[in-house]
Image (cartoon, rainbow, N blue to C red):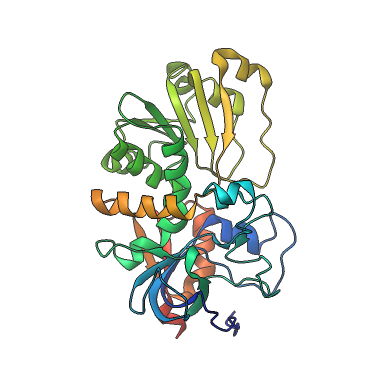
Length: 331
């Protein structure tokens, strides 16, 4: 449903971005449907935002009118806690200000990118390299950084065996990025339906998880597993795929708990971890890394009128691989 939202007045350190494209993330669907808790309706979602800066505050130094700009999953943090001071503001101990459904510094509820304009503090605005098309850049502000961050943190690279669970919006970016880092990449998907795509994106191996033989064949194989699916998985089976000191990292966020059998961790001194987006500096690093290597997500551009249908297709895994809204269709 179309509505009108109000943005705060431009402050001295704010920039005004005219939005060109906004990606659709599974998080948007979870949020609007209340899967993760109560929602401050009415709410405009969207945290994969790209456009051009049309106005800047008097004290802005990082950005200029006309710059290509992006906004990801957060628009502020306390900047004072230990994590913020160390450059990990995504883990702000007081809770970072999310791009939508958070309380902004002026006391209003933040509204996301399925809109024509957004006002953001300059410190939380990204530079979008010229070589990345606008529509492709949008999903990188969530799907890109959400997979890049754990791959970088757990040192994916030459000599490392990395498995990616799920070849969807997050998974296909994880494959592209891990392969570009030099890791040996394996896709673990329910079926082999997307095998050709997975190999094209840089995976060397592709297995169907519906086949029980997969878990026997790949026991004790991987240094790192990136779980991108937003649905429950059999944790014992997947943990059993890790070699000594290997780590399974979840970046998908199912509404249901993931029970972890502790004995599956004891074997091979395995670890289970989570990872949430990335810092602003790391997100810029990811954009530059991808620009230098020609990495971009596979996108399907839609008009705003098709959002509800797109949500249903995401839930049915019927998208290759990320929906992006052309915001001109809102004007």
